[in-house]
Image (cartoon, rainbow, N blue to C red):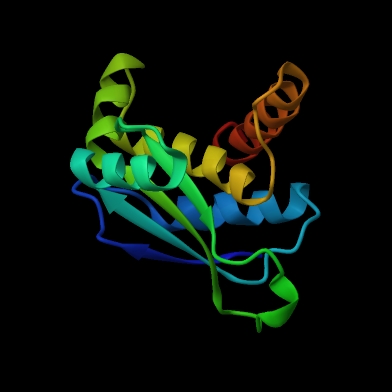
Length: 146
């Protein structure tokens, strides 16, 4: 199961217990190695725009970016940082308003989505989108609807 570290904590409240539950459900549902640390970083619009331009060639802010530090995890020891999820707090807040739910709920939604990207799921094609969305829905219901 993932361990995680929150870098630059956000201005909104979140529950460590809920984050732990998300990681536990992901570990139970997705049978891929998750023995390392995932850093969760919060940035402003300019910070994430710069990362998006540098790493994806897209000159605009996005809500979240997911990064793998390594292609080959066999060289890592358990408990070492292997991934990073970068969340734009400004985008998160505006999306929470757009979707008419709390900032905390939007954070959990983005976190689940990002974790799946970290575990090599994507949504570039319709079939991939359906698979990824299915996992997102299952994890969400396991954490929040039980």
